[in-house]
Length: 533
Image 1 (cartoon, rainbow, N blue to C red):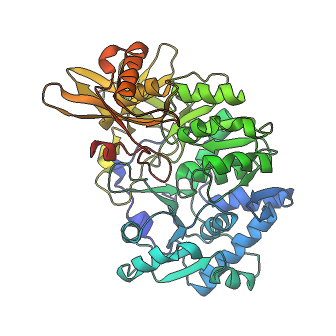
Image 2: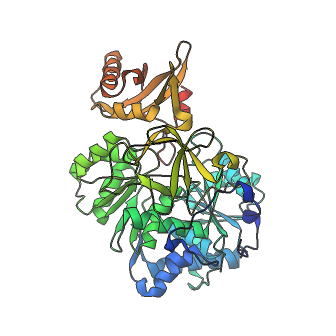
Image 3: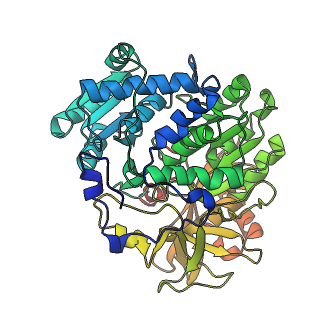
């Protein structure tokens, strides 16, 4: 490893042992990084130095900053952290707020100062915040003033958290306004930790995933230029929080790496996202499948002619949702699978190669394979464990689960996939979501995809529940569109529809109707909560 710039060596000291790290690949010329690298310098400082300072960069509801203005704001925040709060390189800084230009400035201020950014979802409660602060030994926090209550409730039980400042009308802005804009970015090592991202907790205790400055730039060098292909004139918009690596990449890192601009809105619900696309003339939309499905019903009321690319990730994209959006807008969704552990998308397909039901092929810079339970590679057509290698990889913060995720140099994502005859990777289920019923292996998402093709179904989730005769049966939780009744007749209709759509043995033997489904703040379906009833 390169000599670190970190004075506080906590992050480097708690990296997994060398034997537990994945094999890394740096096969593309653009992945040959120098030993000293600061991601904020690369994405922001060098852009301004190259003459792009006056270009639009980050746009909010009442703020429109150029690249130079964001650099200045981040510089002042970095000075507050260092000069007023005593931050030294390597300190962990918790960031808490909805998507906004102010949050983006805080992120860049932390990274410029050599700190480690620890993003947190706005809806987290004190108990969850305590877990993150304790796990990452967070020393500083920058928090939206409207979200202070839960952080304040957590603070008495967080002895490492010594400094807290609020923004959005808080003390941070007042202190920053008194500081000079210039700040010399810390000369971090390429393999100094810049980010600790916590998993979204779809299955239980979240894990802290550590990413180097080099990892952030590697993510910018792989999927965006080879699959998304943004231009300097693009305007990005979307819903995933910046605390989620899908949002951090898609709504901050990738736009800036391309010299484009990004619109950061606090509550990007489907109802709010469509008028925001129209208002800001956005060209690239980044959101989850559930949002595309909801928005497809409303697109006729909005002028979306500016929109040219749509990106889906966060959970599997049902073929029915892809078709629904294309029918409504004419745009083929760019699907992809990534993970917090890998930072961002590693399998995807551009519009020309997209196909309903398939995720795509390995993104340039990455390799993938389908492995059996013994780690042997399976031939096309057989379902197994998705394994990935590339320039990024899993580095859990002091977590025994590292050995589950990384085996024989591969990152095992926890997804069951197969490779079809065309070489496309086709999602089957999360490996813990495969349903074994009467001796058959049934992938819940496949049943969900069949149900979503029925015109009465707005949303659905499918899980396996215990059954004394079959071991498990398939149970569907369904949210109906307005005007449809969730009665026995509808349940039978949906069951018969699934039997006609996919193999009859896969049909849901139990159907429950719900007003809504449990989801994480990033939109992922929480199937474990469905199993609980």
